[in-house]
Amino acid sequence: MHSPINGDVLEERLRQQTQEYRALLADKRPLQAADALSSVLEPATRAFGADSPRVLELRLDVAPARFLGGEFRKTRAEFDALVSAFARVRGFADELTVQCRKFAADCRIELGELTEALTGLRAVLDDVCAVQGDGSETALELRLALGRLLAHMGDRSEACEVLDALYEDLLIVRGADDPLTGEVAAALERFGDDDPALVGEEWS
Image 1 (cartoon, one colour):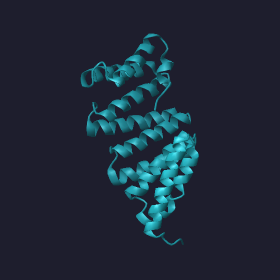
Image 2 (cartoon, helix red, strand yellow):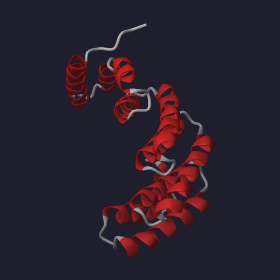
Image 3 (cartoon, helix red, strand yellow):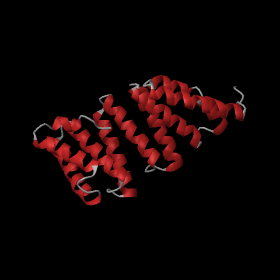
Image 4 (spheres, one colour):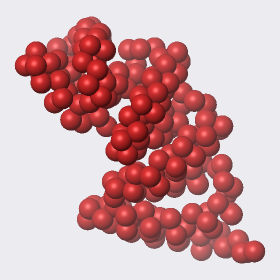
């Protein structure tokens, strides 16, 4: 059994590894960045507790770096675990929980698990809409992600329906000049060009 690291020593290690993590990310080396920060997870967990905000936030820094590095299967498992942890301490519709749920869906998309990704995306959108409303910033972004995923799956009819409703709401809440409104308008225009596959090119 490991003894806890002295508090000052641990804080210095956290500072150093966080600095290295950021430098490696900036250098487009996400897996090395994830490894650098992972090296302090175990002592931080012993010192602060597994469900402490600091440990959860460390894990939430590590997981997206692994996603960027293409470790989708490992990252999916980690985001699923983070969803459970954040939901336990903050609730299913909390911003950080939603972020993890969205990342978990993105991992499933990358792994070709599209049905599971769609189920997860619908569920998180329902929770966000119930708490924040369907016109909240998070809900609007999730609705766009849902439309893109439906298009990627070849469900042209529902994708168009989702994006059409989103566009109408965006005109009201953000206006025609807002970047997100423009993004949705461009996606709908691609449908008009009879090339729905293009709408699903990016879903994150």
